[in-house]
Structure formats: C-alpha cells, structure tokens
Image (cartoon, rainbow, N blue to C red; front, side, top):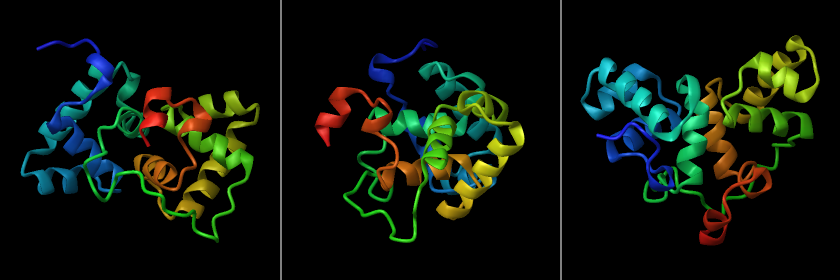
Length: 166
C-alpha cells in the first residue's frame, strides 16, 4: 500500500465514503454508524486520506474540497455538483467568500486572519457569519455547500481538466 499521493489525487472508495459523510454534515459517530464501521476506522480513513492527498492536519474541509476537485463525489447523487441556483437569500460578500476559500484549503482561524489581513477576532466573526448564511457550523459541510452552490470551484483555481469536465 502506497502512502504517497495517488495519481490525480483520487481517494479510495472507503475514504470517499467517509469524507462524503462529513460533506453531508454528519459527525464521526454518525458516519461510523452509517458505514457500519467503528469510529476508530473512520479516523483511520481520514488520516490515510490526508496522507494520500498530501493534506496536512486531517482537515476535513480540505479533504471535501479535494474530493470535489478530483471528481470523487461525481457519482454520489446528493453531493454531485448540480446546476443548482444559489439560494436568493444567500448574499455572499467577498470577505465571506474568501473565508470559505480558506476553510476549503484547511486553514485555521489564525491562518485565515493572516491570509485576509484581519484580526483573529474578525476572522472568527467571518466564520460565524459564513456558517450562519450556509446553515451549518461544520467546515466540511460548508465546503460541500460552497461547491454545490458554485461559491467554490473555477474561481479559486480548480484544475482545468475538472472545470472542462463539468
């Protein structure tokens, strides 16, 4: 078994299943129950997925983003990117969109503050407002909704071959 990045960064089916559970907004216990595996196995799949993709710190938001960028969710109907309109009530200011991009890259609140040139308290407030607008408090779910509502993707540097495939 190779621990290096896979060709094109693809996840194994088991890893995709676990990351998909998080993308749906589920927590570890619920992901484990749905897949009929232990919470320890869920953690193992996340750790191996992070190593396989080169994502540091087992960032679930970054793993969800990676799965979208590399087509790992394309065959999962409730997670596949659709031509679904952004909800009319969702008005995403640039600061919140950039915050979502930071979450998708797996950046901490401190790293997000540095990236955006704001205080840590302001970065926390941006995250709070972003989660409020998206209706979640979970970073991997926020990233999934960002992809489904096309708040993430081509404009943040998705590989050209994935953009062309849509």
